[in-house]
Length: 556
Picture 1: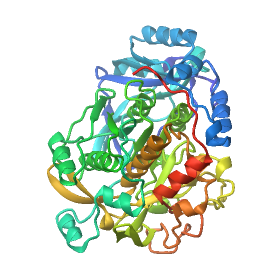
Picture 2 (picture 1 turned 135 degrees about the vertical axis):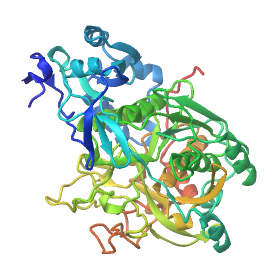
Picture 3 (picture 1 turned 45 degrees about the vertical axis):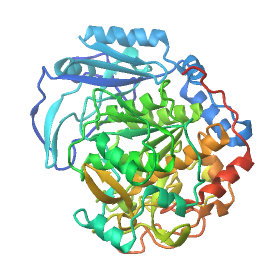
Picture 4 (picture 1 turned 90 degrees about the vertical axis):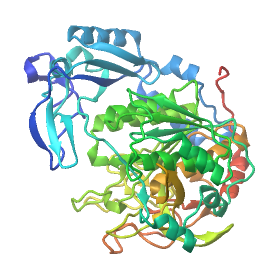
């Protein structure tokens, strides 16, 4: 059905289907009854902008094609003035909300989002959906099936409606090594590392005080205990970082006490990023694990004029086919915002190999890592000591463990900057030519993992979750040395000499033990991307390419 084709769903003859909004129930989920009509809930709308999305895409493509010294990033003020929501559009949405008894809770005009709140019954009528409760073996959720419907006069204004369905949208991409004994055994055999030791193996620039940088970290559950962080950084001899918590959609720093749950992700992200980029401020954006929560966390971080992160680390995601097209479109637009503002976004590529954990006989890549506007971070197994890497290969523990995510996107086309990377056709039927994942890699095998303190426990943790904050830390160091942010760095990385990476040429990411559809090879591959970094060589090469000229926000 086209967006302007009328629907009588829910009795609204002038409501139309919102393209890309169709949902199905989760596999193994059973409908157990209608949602409570008096349940209070919130929903996020993504609106069109004063300037069309194609204009922002053009600006970023032009920026990406330029040498660094010719780039000019927008300030937050410039961006808001150019790409904000049209006041007339906003007025129509406010009138629609009023007509259905909904409240306008929050407007982020720069991000193009409006958050509405009200009763479930009001939302059902407003968007022509039947909300129901579903029971899954691991959780219950409020869900919907079919399309969202919107009034005809909003059809060209509203691009996405997120949050009607509050199923968990993403999983954390971390793995704990032998949880009970792993840390001790790893310490005895010398195969786990502190984050600074990993940075040393990768030759990160040393003695850099990243005090001008802020690293934003997205978290969709759990939390950290300040006493743990104090003890951790004291142990590894690094000054306590300055950490700010940012609440999104009512979520807060809320440790569960389960180190194997989301607390493990939060501690890993903070401890790796802060230990690598010493002196950097850390802003942690806590949000609900829903499509709306994820989007709002990202837009809050990107358009945060107080903390102003220059790099954002995301270690949460899910297979592309687990997302609605409208949610992917909304988040991808947010990543375009980041590119225009000079913010680098690092995303974990997934821990379930070439299938991304989907058991349908096909290969899948993880989103948001598959967005062409983020730096997708894959995983390796790293062995070495001091500054010497003894060997490094694609992380793959087989069926009983994890493996680096990677492959070819079913959603995004091959970006121009990947055209010479020899990205293979997708291994799925049809051999689609698309965006290749990941872009880069780093240590991810839990058996050669990172020493982390979480909920009072010392653990060795790996997963591509560790690689995103590792690369975020490296980008922060480079930004500090340059004096400006590199921003959308992907086109630059693909143009650099291969010597700035450790080319990974051993291993694959098929967890079934076969050679699989994607294997490592010389140059880019769908397991480890361009490879793991030689941090100092990478920084020197970027510096030689040119210094980014940006227009920075001047008000603190």
